[in-house]
Image (cartoon, rainbow, N blue to C red; front, side, top):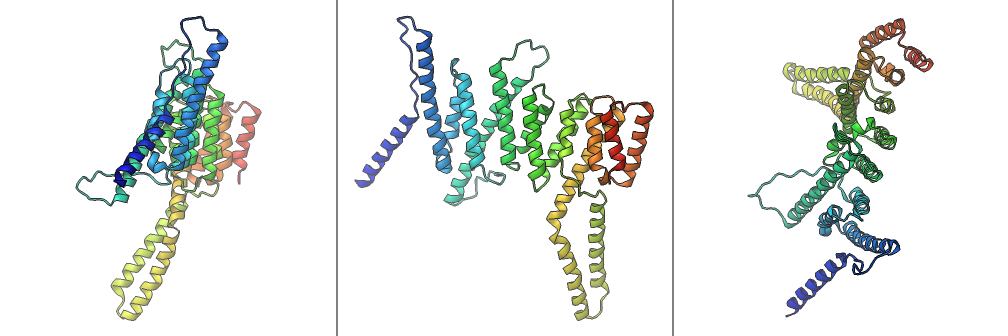
Amino acid sequence: SSSDEDESSSDEDESSSDDDYNVEKVEGDLSRPVSMAEMLALREQNINQYKYKIGLLSSALLEDPHNKVMNIARLLEIFDEWSPELQVTLKKLVTVSLLEVFKDILPGYQIKHQDEPNVKLKKETRDLRNFEKSLLKGYRGYLTRMEKLASRLYKKKGDTRTRTAKDISLGELAVKSFCELLIAHPYFNYSNNIVRLVVPYLDNPNQTVRTCVAECFKHIFTHDKRGEIILEIVRKINELVKTRKHTVRPDVVAVLSHLKIKDVNLDQLKEAEIKEKKLQDKKSRIINLSKKEKKRQKRIAEVEKELLETKAEENKQTRLTLLTETTKMVFTVYFRILKSAPTSGLLSETLQGLAKFAHCINLEFYHDLVIVLNRLMATGELKTVRTQFNCSLVFNSP
């Protein structure tokens, strides 16, 4: 029948497409000596075959993510292949290819599924959920592998092994991948996990890695419109500084001065809450006390209009709330350094940040700040010209 022919044809197409993805490694003739030039040529030939396979898998994913989502697993299999002469190259090729794929195909929302075995779903809904589950599983597998690569940049206590240039190169690429994913999809699944992983690299001995993470955070501080991810970054920086008892590189504190919190007023949130409560109380009194229905309805309408205007600013207020929390967290970091570790090497960056944001502090905190800075000047802690200059900026900030 024609349906059987179609099915047979379909099977042939599937089989041939699978053949396209197969890589037959080229082996040298071991019955005779092989020159270095021949070995390099064989290696290059094998790499080109893998490049072709990785390119096919990635292109198919980009063109048709829903039907080719299993290609993520195939690419991760290549990443995991054990091939001493190709291992680093393959890991780099797959890392970069999947990075570009994820930047392109990850949705702009968080995937949230609740297993409901007894609920019947439409075919379209079921297909979408299956795609999302496969996508999330592949993404999680990718992030896990990147975490392992990035860990090569740190030496654990007692580990005397020398880190090779290849280890460092793979570690740098992994951190770069984390940063690019965080910039491209700051609110997709596992974004908080990525923040937790990359913040400590602000204090890594590797300058390239520190710069990569700092530039990532600066970009997010400048372009993020919601505020949740910014607050998460600042929280993790605060934890890092506190856990390491202020023995961190200045880069960790310096990045905070790039936050866009100049318009934050720490008292503004409280004022907005008081205003809304007064309006709600006013509405309740009108409902309870008015005698004439027509007059009562008119007054309720007026108050509800005011409440709607208040609600219209809810998104703006939510962001302001997050910015306010972020600002408080930043000052927590700064004040703890001033009080507990003025000689830690972080003083100059701390004062520079305070000079930029001092006008955001309410009067109570400002009073404490003046006392601490006066004490530092009296004890001679402000030794360098730059530190003294930053201190004067704090007092002179508008």
